[in-house]
Image (cartoon, rainbow, N blue to C red; front, top):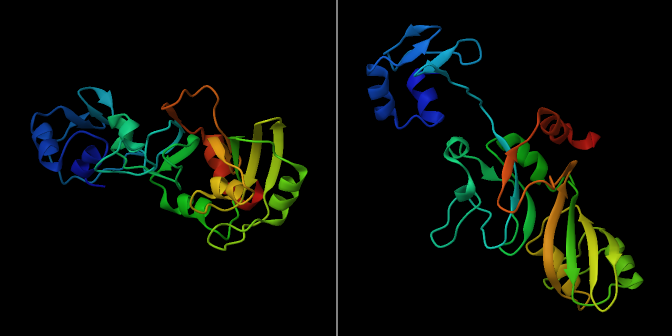
Length: 239
């Protein structure tokens, strides 16, 4: 990879700004000052430093975010704050994108990455990746609801959902539930309960595939996935 492209990709400025940086002699490759922007380097086998600090380059970035309400699951939006707006510059420069979407008023686990292959694997309808949600419902959830979800319910557009696993956490005049689905239709969880004459008043995604939401992440916070978590996601059908 060209040296100027590498430095630009990880946040040292535009190609023009990087060329200006190189001219000052503060960039070194294997201990030697380099000013040639076109020089091809291998960041995996060569030591590259700027102002004496080692440059750490990675092709892909994998982030877990605890998405807050009021934020759009998109890379850009002219009117609303997006999940990408919550990222620090050193992470945003890798241009990660949300894997799937959470509604504006839904909280919880959201993955962001620039690994298109993994994103496709997690979103492909053929893969049936399970996603589990915690929700508060405006009335009691019955055994009939559980059985209906197990068979699949018809949404307002006539689509019949795939079987879903509905568990009641707390019941009464209102209810708290966990729901696991294997597809991601628009507003699906809300529409599934609407098909039963009920309303979701709070919604949070708590897991996706083998990955549970890190409970130590406050709303709006995020962290990089561990190597073990990345490997689990890539294992796909072996979950």
